[in-house]
Image (cartoon, rainbow, N blue to C red; front, side):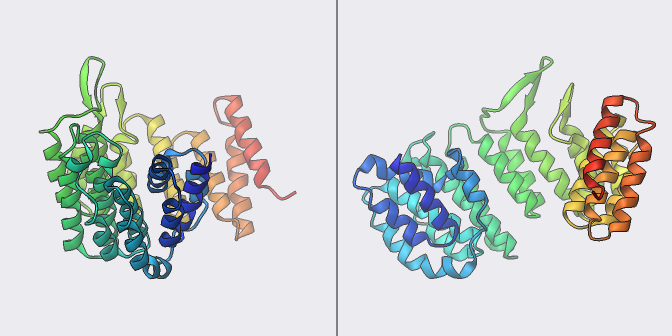
Length: 364
């Protein structure tokens, strides 16, 4: 539809910092219902299949164009005729400003958004203040402004608590705080979750499981590990494992956090807390891939020696070979070592997978 096309173009413009042009596209839609839909979709493109993929291919905007368009964008947003339209418009500006590294502008735009009570609990627009203030907090934290980040996250918490089921929002907030290094503040939010309704509680093997809480604890445990609070991290990580399942890597998150901090020997030791050898090998393989993605080949080579099974060892060697592409001799040596392991891989189909993947890496 035309509304979808306008929303897609507006989302692209906003991501490039051209929020004034994006909002003009929405403003020029004559039909009120269609105009509101364009603004909503522009604010939350992830809800549209195809648009999110398109935006993902566009580099986040630089600070300068977003800052240049800020004043004009604020005037356009203020001129929309209904509060709902203005909320979505200011949300677009706030998100773009936060993403472009202008937290002060993001906070100013966020302050113009009506609180949830004015929008009606449970509505799409009722979520806007929470997500915007969370984005502002993340932007301040990235800029090193801890006091401002704490204040913005506190606003996000206040917005979340106005919802009938705030636990999901609080979980996302705690995860953001943990990722920004605000561990103790995140723990306080988790404690607040216990006093609220959750829409993500379930039972597993007859026992209650609060997924919102566990996802938050998982993120906090990783942040603790990165800061060297290993014993505390291990305690929280154990809580993310339950009878018959776990949140993501479960107790392995401690090893992930330590590896991200470059503490490889400690990461290998922490990985041993995962007593299932198969899950431990998969955990280490995932950590190896993450270290290679960050450009740390030596870390990956060291972590590989913690893997027990030949199949995961061979996979790790092939991943390392990809990272060694610039040094052809080293890459070939890793591929050859992986090929040697195919003789001892238990299942022929897995050995064949390694042979095929190795063949793709060898020179033709």
